[in-house]
Length: 456
Figure 1 (spheres, rainbow, N blue to C red):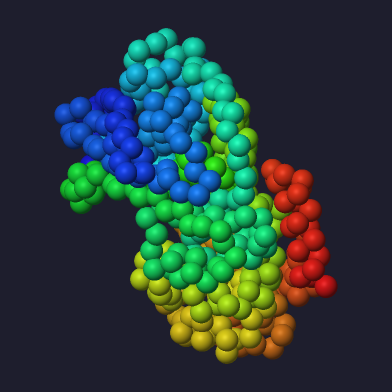
Figure 2: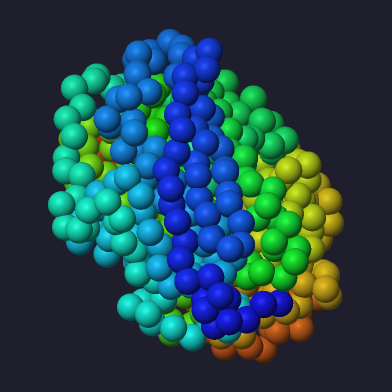
């Protein structure tokens, strides 16, 4: 493994050189140009469909489209920048204001929080990265561009887990277009089960193989804020497809830090803080009617699990496991699998859970450390998209209080039973409503009504 300080000395700058854009038979094809001088050039690519029912004619010289594509390139830079973490990122051929530069520095720093933690990198936000605009003084910015197009319907990103399934079910009748990047077996299975959708939108992302080769050679590697990439890609897709609302499925549980008493959060780009920042960024770029928000933000993971328990047609096809989702399976050996199993345990009979997962996960000794991390017995949570420590404690104690037995809950029964949380707390959690959200009024009314319906 190469050393962070040595790499920064050897490779002091990262160059975001720009991009090429073409319309190839109804597909906007983008090739980005980036470089760490002395190490490697990088050319990741994206493809966005731009022809179909409701799609507006968009020129490749369209100023709003180009600003969006430029911004997607900025967040795409993170994957390549992290190889050596140069002190300076030079942006070519674009202008960013002082506030916009601060915005990007914050995203790089917080979005790479887990990466810094796991690589033992000690630095401040000020020292970590300086972003400079080569062709201007960095104070002008690119202003707010006018968008006169008409938009309708919802673009709903689908990851294949329980959260996006709940959004699909609750948003029936709102003009759903499903959204995926590349897609895999799980997302295809879930989308095929959603009979109420109007259409599917699939964009394509290709990583530069040179980055993967350098990872193998020991250059710095780790978690990047993928949901920030999704954010920009969804706005481009909504712009091209004419969809007004981008309805994410991030819940308020995503706000909890992974490393206790810190701001290091595996789910930073799923947090409400990032959602607020992103909406600010888009509003200061275009006056488009497109609106980005998380539909499930007022809810906890447990409320989502409760609602999902009634979405029975999706039980055979949903997969929340990152390791197995490409093949459409549960790996049954990771913290994500264990969390979803535990979160569903109060709402789905155990014999049915075992049919879904293929085995009883709370009986697996190999998941002992994951259980301790998820339930707060250990201070830090697993670096996965999982619920809060409180939610896992509630589920585990409820499991015990209902007379169920398993290796892991038996092993930590004394600790879990000392928790003030449990079945009584479960009832309160299922009626909670987090007021920190950005739901448009009609979506808030819909979600409140559905939550009341499920809570009866």
